[in-house]
Every structure is written in structure tokens, then in C-alpha cells.
Image (cartoon, rainbow, N blue to C red; front, side, top):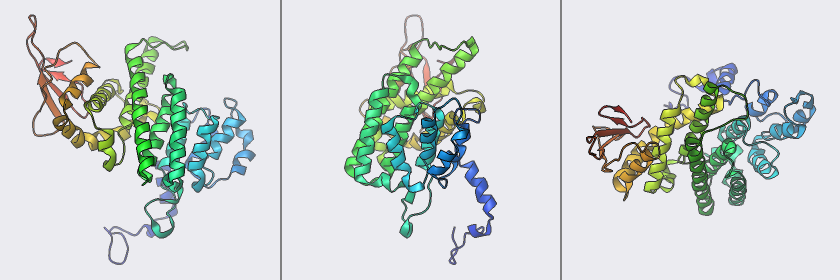
Length: 370
């Protein structure tokens, strides 16, 4: 609430010390792995006030695990808040940075999501993101993202790179008012969804083997995290502004994919989230908000779409084929997140009532879990 004199109801922001804002900036800044290959470049993630010369002059801090070209490419992304989008597009074309690395993913997220200084005339679109709103830039960016997606679609180790493309497409969609750019961005999100879905099938159906000599427990943890990451990335293809949700969540197949991803997230999330890497925790918490935001639309689609109920069936079937579902789902209770159906009775088994929570709980039966 704002008073007539322009001050905030609690206190005007001007009454707070700069130290308070520094604390908030730290809380809202992505944290790269302290012991990782980019550990000396946290300042390149935290702000945009440093210069390219600063990065060049600090080459003596370049870790042995990366090349000088990699070090400079990472450091130059955010040198100047008005240049960030152009720098990101340049790196997509150059291919110097390893986009499959989680720290590079965090760098791009920080550049895309940090609001930055306000624009002249106090317009809603901040100075840092004016390029993303331009028609020519937006079209070129989506074309370049399409080319990158083509090059990585057969290699699921590039999951974080796909996450970069998904986030960029969704961000450009929120910035532009050009129909052709909007259509291209939505098309890219749908393509990325198909790629992620293919990777999910590979991870969940194949026995994962790693080259590193890890024990069985570590190997299982790695597999669970891979599946969790892919499922969250799949859901993120629906994470667009409210006005575009109906364009990315249109069909029974979309419902099925979303249900499948929600199931995987529920099954693969660890008991203690702090055990996840920072990048995966960021994605997980963002997905929690998305699940709640999509709930009314998802429930409405299930009721209204031809074959919408079948979307739940197919999504659950992709996880487990132990039971045959009747496919007639009805809302259960007073909330629009619970649906129920029954299994088909067989000679040696009776029909069971099945309950499913659209927010992601694994399907439950009269006698327990599936």
C-alpha cells in the first residue's frame, strides 16, 4: 500500500540502509558451485557493473579446469546490463561455453531474470531486457536456439543446455509483443518438450551406467537426479505468462506429459532437498510455484478437452502399467486437484478405486500406492 505522499505503508524504501539491499541482492543471486570450475567467477553472476577489462586482467585467477577462452566467455556475459542479451546470443553462436554445465545455466538464468535498472519513462520493460523485446533480435535468437536444439537433441547429457533454451524462449515470450516472435518462441518450447520427453523415456527405461567408479548408492542417486532434472525441465515448458498458458497446454497429449512429469518429480525428489545441487533446488522450488499456478488450468483442460481424461491415463500408464484403468476420471472432493477412477476388474483381482493428485502425488489405491 502506498500513501498519498508516495511513501510505503510500513516505511519508504529510502529509510533502509544500503546494507539491507546488499543483503537482499545476495539472497536473490544465483550461487555457482564454490568448488566448481567457475568458482572464481561468482562476481560475473552477481552483477553487471564490472568491465571486460576486469575479466581480462584477472586471467591469473582462471582455474586449471577451464581454458582462458571459457573463462573470458563466462565473464563477459554480464559486462554491462544493456549488453546481456546480445552477449548470450553471441555465445549461443560461438559455442565456446559448455551449456551443459549447471554453473553456465545459472549464469544465464541470472542474466535473464534479474530486473536491472528501470527504463526511461519508468516503463515496465527494464533497460536490461529491451533487446529481448525487439522483433529482429527475438527472431534471430529463436533461430539460433533452434540450431542449438538440433545439435543437442540426441544427447541427454545436455539437459542443462536444453534448460537454457527453454528459459530463454519463455523469457522472450514475456518480453515481446510481436506475433511472429511469440509464435516462434512457443514453437521452440514445444520442440524442446518433445526432446525432453524422449530423454525421459531413455532415462526411465534404460539402465544408466556411468564411467566413474561409483558405488551402487551413488549410482542410484545420480539416476534419480537425472530423472528429476528432466521432469522439472519438462514442466518448465509450460512456465509462461498466464496469457500464453492455453497455447502451451492445449491437447490431451500435453496433459499426459504434464501428469507424467509430475509423477516423476514426486517419485524422484529426495527426502532432504538440501542434498540437491543449488541449480536443481532453484528449479525444484520454481516448479512448486508452477504446479499451483497451473492447477486451475490443468483441471479445466481435463474436463473440457476431448480425451482430456485420457491424458491422466496415459501419463500414469507411462510410469506404471501394472493396472488397467477405466479411464473415466471424476473430480474427487471439493478441491480441483484430486481426481478418481477405478481399475478394470480381472478374474483374479477386483476393481479398485484410484486417486490422483494433480499437484504431483503418486497415484494411490484403496490398498495403498501403485
